[in-house]
Image 1: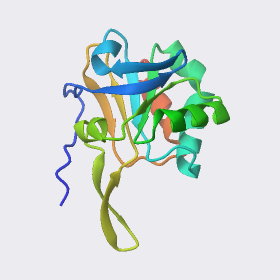
Image 2: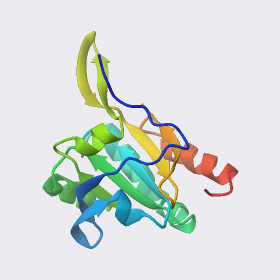
Image 3: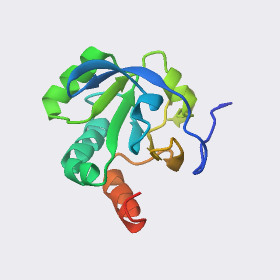
Image 4: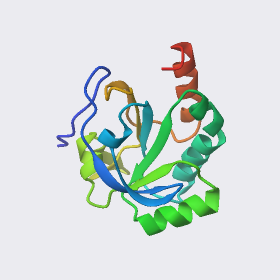
Length: 164
């Protein structure tokens, strides 16, 4: 049975740190470093798979809307920085990508969970997205999201709340 935590709105964002591929190149990135501005942290299983590519490209295609609202967008997967570099270049992704091969960031956010496929149970990454305030508080926690349409729904939700 999975012992993954489930974050809820109002909870403090878990501390996290990871190696990231930023638009400026490789760098260390952490929740603490992002304090002072709101951010979206989205978790996806694997670079260059159909669903993950669609989701990352949805964030890319709505980049202006995220920037206009003051959000930084950060994608996290267990893939290597080298894989992220290829993924970013192939799809012209403007946002940060964090490499989490140890799954420490995934586990801290409760997205490394039991999954089922064709009757088999295994541990894997549940596609999930979190919106975090400038003060480090979870505003929205969405687990097991669909790859397509999710970004537009999230922007609509944030727009209904006045952007934050």
